[in-house]
Length: 141
Image 1 (spheres, one colour):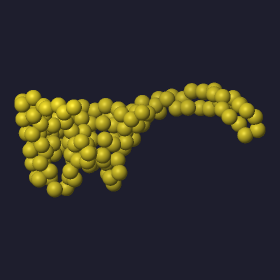
Image 2 (spheres, helix red, strand yellow):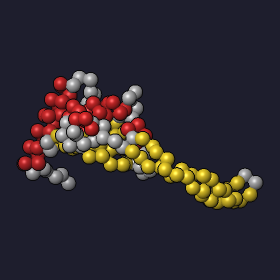
Image 3 (cartoon, helix red, strand yellow):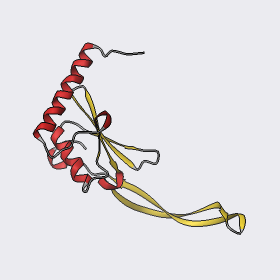
Image 4 (cartoon, helix red, strand yellow):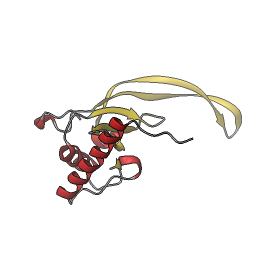
């Protein structure tokens, strides 16, 4: 089944594509996004700088959220007119991991010489400090 966008939504989406083309044309140092208007900056030499560069070039308001099944991905989301865009990177590449405490955890695990054995280990309690990438420009990211 095919769905057709309403005219105003379609026009905004097309305007967003044109605006994205303008951003890419005036910023030759930014590669086009990958599939579905998503940049993946994790594999780049300096993902934080690349993410900052893309956000700065596109401008506007950006929201951020955790992603991935374990929360290890940071997703920056925005819109260019009616065109949704996002940037994905490893959270550790743009946020600071802060250890706020430790605790002892006991769990039962398989052992080579016994069916199961209890093991106690120390685990860190952490929080992620994700400072705005563009604090000096007033953009939210």
